[in-house]
Image 1 (cartoon, rainbow, N blue to C red):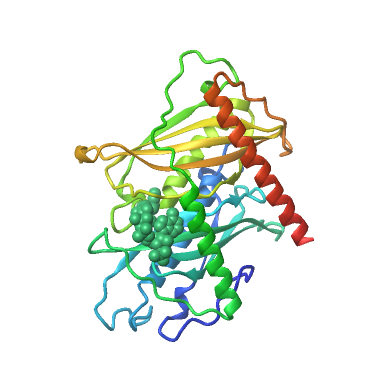
Image 2: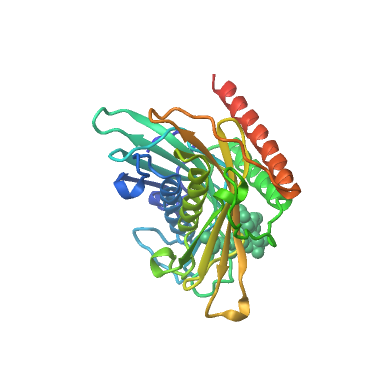
Length: 359
Ligand code: COA
């Protein structure tokens, strides 16, 4: 385990030490990558979420005297932790087919009903031994009772190695809670097909896919894993970016995503993406996920998630290329472009500040 993130001191006596750490390695295969061998951002997001789901579900079931070695000394309500939020994450380096992805996850904070998990992904070139950190992600999970999916379970507390670490965790918890209240869901918006769109307009690259939610997409409750949803979202965003610039494209970052609504097995999900902003060398794509519970027609179609992905266009040597500017055709598109520009400038300033902090 690479101790790159905040360390949680030895786990309280009632928790077995397997509960708060998780490490997994897997070789990257052609299925995980695009045609030139870059591993998809969605594949990495799915691995990150799998690690987070395992560690938080394990932690939340390790309570009332139970441990991983002696799992059920007392009767307890078993639960599954569902992904509620992913903080903004940057893709720091590319990962390629044949490299080994090492995913390490650690529980770093617990509130009454949520678990913060920090995950680090390393890409190892097993021919040269070179290792690079490709992602650092922070995810929040909320545990649901297996007997009643509407019941949220209380999370067992972790023990912190210092008061400062607990306070830092509390600050992150308060900050995300505040941000969630401020972020508006874009519920009503839909992406309509455009007939014969002009090149480089929003309509030219907008794309969607439809997916029937099957058992392998779901948790023990029969609801979609957050990682599966993020992978579909990345797929659509990647198609939008590639249609716009017709080059090899890679995911550079994903803004914070809140998972407000569950998606049940049997639903048909429509994932739609449209370009909102282009800078000189980056493209921002907004993605909507709508769920249609076909057999529960009374529930109707609903918006489950929205997110912004940023993509970069690469030349044959993997160097960033300029992207064609987005042609804006109406006031709505101009407004979205200006909002995208604000996010772009804010994120750029944050990255710069982070760089300076590390020097
Ligand atoms: N990010 C982080 N934590 C969140 C959250 C979010 N987006 N939304 C809720 N929470 C936390 C709250 O902070 C609270 O914990 P606390 O009491 O320790 O502060 C806990 O969840 C319950 O909050 P509450 O307001 O009672 O619940 P809710 O009605 O807002 O429901 C979810 C929250 C997460 C249960 C609900 O939005 C949901 O079911 N989302 C879908 C989860 C899912 O299926 N994920 C995979 C999607 S593909």
